[in-house]
Length: 129
Image 1 (cartoon, rainbow, N blue to C red):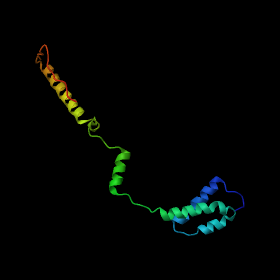
Image 2: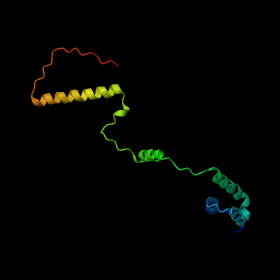
Image 3: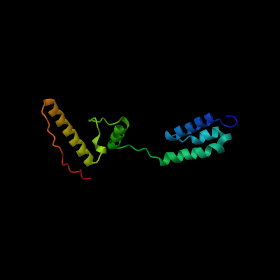
Image 4: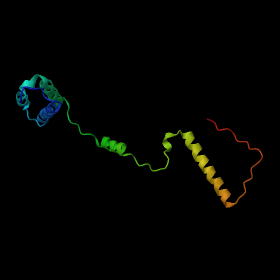
């Protein structure tokens, strides 16, 4: 190669070639650096970094639990109900269920034609919180 500065693209391609040689266990990095002798000072730190990272970073195989959890998180878990009750405190869940049941009972009584007699005053204790 000529003694001119490498362009950004040429530098990226060269670093990719060095990385591929190191990853494929082809210790021909020195040959690449000799080919680019004019830019050796600029390339040498990158080549050392690539070689050091190859030595330090050991490929790991993720556990099946991790891959299952990651897949569920990325794809999104299918919810089986229309409403996620888990985000509410237990008291709120109980109150919501009680209100739904009471509303359903009132609806059934009205549809069946039964008269609901309401006393003039109701003594209803306040909900304790």
